[in-house]
Figure (cartoon, rainbow, N blue to C red):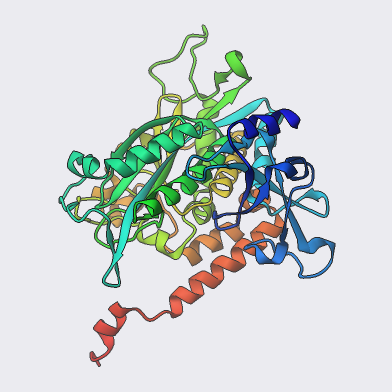
Amino acid sequence: MKALHDQLAAQGVHSLLVQFTDIHGVARGKLVPLTHLDDVLAIGAGFSGPSIWGTGLARTGARSEYYARGIASTAQALPFMPGVARIVGEGFVAGEPFDACPRQVLARQAARLAHKHWTLQVGIEPEFFLLKREGGRWRPADDLDRLDKPSYDLKSLVRQAPFLTQLSDTLQRCGLDVLQIDHEDAHGQYEVNFAFADALASADRLMLFKLAAHAVAEQRGAVFSMMAKPFVDQPGSGMHCHVSLWEGKGDNARNAFAPHRADGSLDTETLLSPIGRQFVGGVMAHAAALTALAAPTVNSYKRLTVGESITGTTWAPAYVAQGYNNRTALLRTLPSRFEWRAPDASANPYLMLAGLIAAGLDGIDRGLDPGPDCADDLFALSLAQIRERGIALLPQNLAEAIDALEADAVVTGALGDTLTREFVALKRDEALAYARHVSDWELERYATAF
């Protein structure tokens, strides 16, 4: 790898940030001098396995060591850390790919697609808050961001332009194609859209985005947050995924979700091909289990409810439905692609995409039909009306989602035994700790009530 070494050295790089992702979707890693690039690529940077969330590794013996083995194609100089290049690492234990490494989990599902000459192309749209802590409370970093309907507010966008333009410039210098940035539907909330890429590359880029955004915000005295729902009266942060399945490679690749007529021409009157509808059918069939991966915290379920906010809606799905350009449904179907709206900003991108692939492939294998398109504004219907239409409800709390995950052999099969066991145990502990917590709301309501 002398060529890569020389290329990085010519950019002023002296150290590698060997980065991997833990089970919670948090970036971890260490700095390694560039002179040890060959070791990072061949063996990996070493870590104490049991010190990493979700490995379940022993404290002694050969299987107590976790190695993040670098992937050469991901090496990228970091503008916010002069002299340092990030390189994505995959987990290895005892010289073998580690089954509970989130990136390896996604790589296994990507390999299933590759066996069929398919790749999943994903455009991830992360929403986030820019916050500050003041008087013991979290608040939007922009004190003047107070509109009742702040979506696309240009005044706040101008006030936060120094942060947003620096973030955009940083991401583009890291090779990410930034399509647009806007003010979202809550105070202090923004969204960055990237060009789509294959599932593994999209997840790697999302982790790079988080590293950059944390660093740039901290430099400016603010806090970058991907908490699902920080404020009770405002919409939460989603991480919507635009999804399509492609067959072949390079210039010969074609969108397998694109519908065609018998003569080979594009059918502009139909949204999705039969394979596309079957993939959607699989996602709907496994929607409850996927919610545990897409909405992985107790806070996530304060977002996945239908109710009023200062803007009039939460924009987060609560019902298992699909329909053309329907932002109130779980799946918003569009020409030759669909948007999965369940994921929130706290989701581990590798795990949620691995589960999505497994569910979609199951839909194709079983020829599942997603049913009729839903054109209703689901937020405007009562629960009784939802039930009359036979529309299922997504899990409404983390414990319920984990139950659904444990019962779903397709999704847990994609995660593997080790990661499923660790994820379920950690999330059940989180749900129990939350259930036992006594909040200020409870004290105010009950302390003197009886």
